[in-house]
Length: 254
Image (cartoon, rainbow, N blue to C red):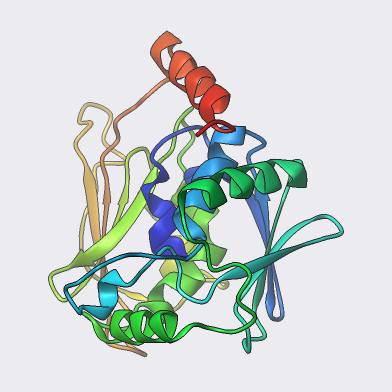
């Protein structure tokens, strides 16, 4: 799920459109930015659907997050996988927005929402994704719970992640000062215990705006996470406001 919604780009101060995160045992509460565009993107990127593919590659049989289902409950939309205890509860928006979007998606795709269990194609896709290149859950599950740590003080923040050099790359376009990120992900009392393998930081320099780079290493799993902060310094200018207005207008149309 983290990898899927990372591609949303920079829409606000809130990375991935997430305003706040509330971790609980087997439940992750996520308060979303109340913009129709964000809700459309999440539903479009997450909900699984069958894909007509003749290659035989299990990676290509299902788009979205294999096995993901949802139901509406008090306070928001509950995302879950049949047979798994973990749930994610996106809130902060009108749940009817989600339903309007899914109604539109059903017109274009064969959504698997009505399946009570995983389909064989979903299980094949999930198995293939878990084995290649390496299983990402030990890295990205805690990162989703700490996604606000990747947001800088600017007006627009975007966070992305993908496989890189046998590990994973985490990129922020306008991230926080490096000491803050290190405290939250590595060294602080609530950090993940990750080690810093290499760091190039320009945060404390008053005349250089170059990018920062930190190579994190998780000693428990052996995974590397290569972080970079581009420091783009983007602002909510007229172009951005026009884009958001168009995107929100189109969120409920085919």
